Structure formats: structure tokens, C-alpha cells
Amino acid sequence: MILILGLILLIAAVIVGLAGVFGNTGPGHDLGVGGDFSIFGYHVTGSTGSLFLSGIIVGAVALLGLTLVMMGARRSVRRSAQARRERDTSRREAAVVDRERDDLIKQRDDAHAGAGAGAPTTDMPRAETDAPVTDAPRGRGHWFGHRAAHR
Image (cartoon, rainbow, N blue to C red; front, side, top):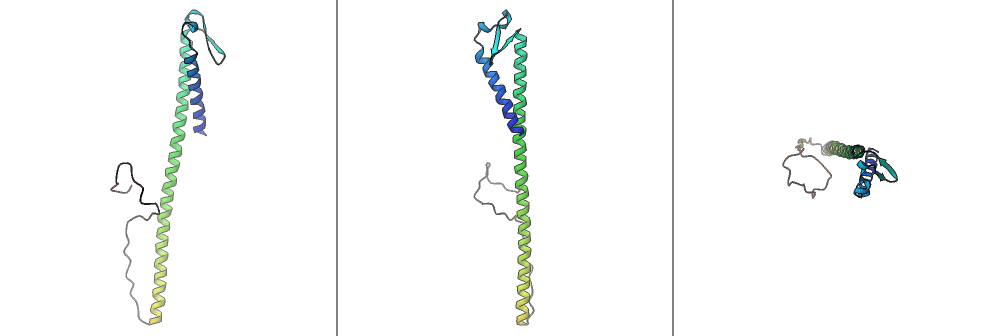
């Protein structure tokens, strides 16, 4: 919503500014001599200072529109980054749960096999690695080459 409002303000300010620039035909619109200046049928009469003030107002509206566009873009980037972090966290948690489930299944199978043969079995603890488990494709390159460390 903020992004759309900012685009509307920015486009309106640019249109009014361009209409003012292209509507100025030189000496025929000299405000200092009592002439008038018209934009979209609205006649501005008065001094050059009032025209300058109108230009400042149009510039301020354009700056407000640009600020709103940048705020909207920043907000959407922040939301998508947060969603990516949450997705990665849930994938890591799911991988841990899968590992625990596999360990329990292995222990159960070993217990059933040991009970059937009558010989006790010794479980060797599985080596845990600190490497993150992701389902993302590995072929994605980075802008500035290989990253040596994780974020």
C-alpha cells in the first residue's frame, strides 16, 4: 500500500513538473511582466517567487513519493529475508527430527535383531556433524565468488 501510494505521488509530481517545463515557451510566460503560466488549465499569475514556491512544493511531493517507494521496497525485502530465515530454521529442525527418528528406528531394529539371536549388541554412537542440512540446490553461484564461512 505504501509502495503504491509513493508511486502515485512520484508519478504525479513528475507529470506536473514536466508539464511546467514544456509549457514554458519563453517570454510569452514571463511572470515578472504580469503574464500568466498555465499547467493543465490552471493559470498561475503572480511573481517569479510564487512560481519558485510552486516548484519547491512539487519537488517536496516528489521527494515524499520517492521516500514512500523506498520504504515499501525495504519493507518487502525485510519480510522476504525473514521468511527465508524461518524456512531455513524449520528445515534444520525437520532434519534434526528426522535424524532422531532414524536413530530410534535403528535402535528398535537392533533390539529386535538382538532379541532374536540372543546375543547382546553394542550400539556405537553416530558421529554428529555440524554441517547444515538444506534442500537448496548447490549450483547457485554467489556474486562475489565463494563464501568461506556461513552467515
